[in-house]
Length: 102
Image 1 (cartoon, one colour):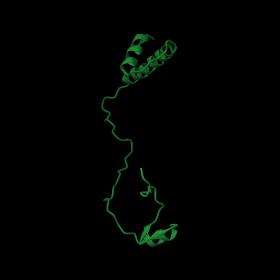
Image 2 (image 1 turned 120 degrees about the vertical axis):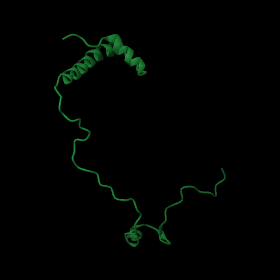
Image 3 (image 1 turned 60 degrees about the vertical axis):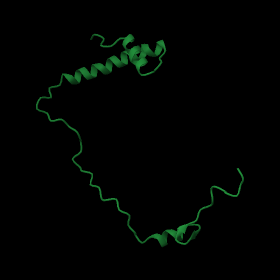
Image 4 (image 1 turned 60 degrees about the horizontal axis):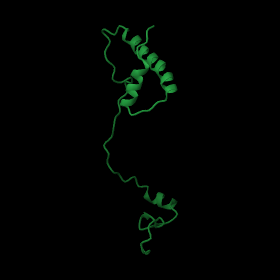
C-alpha cells in the first residue's frame, strides 16, 4: 500500500493549525494519519447508490412543551425546608457587605 500522506504534509497541516510537533511526534503522527486516510479511502469504495442519506439515526422525535411559568403550589413546602425564610423568600447570607469602605 502506497503512502497517501508524507511527513512534510503533516508538518504543513500542523503549522496551519498553529501546532508545533517535535521530529519524533511527526514521525509518529505521519503513519497514523496515513492509516486514517486509508480508512476513508476504504469507505469511498462502498457502493452507496440508492441509499438514502441519514441525518438522524433515531426515529424518536423531541416533543417540546411551551416554556411557561406555572405555580405548582409547592412554595410553602420549599420554604419549610429552607434554613431561613421571610415574606415568601429564602433568606441567604449577604455576600457583599456594603458597609465596608473600598
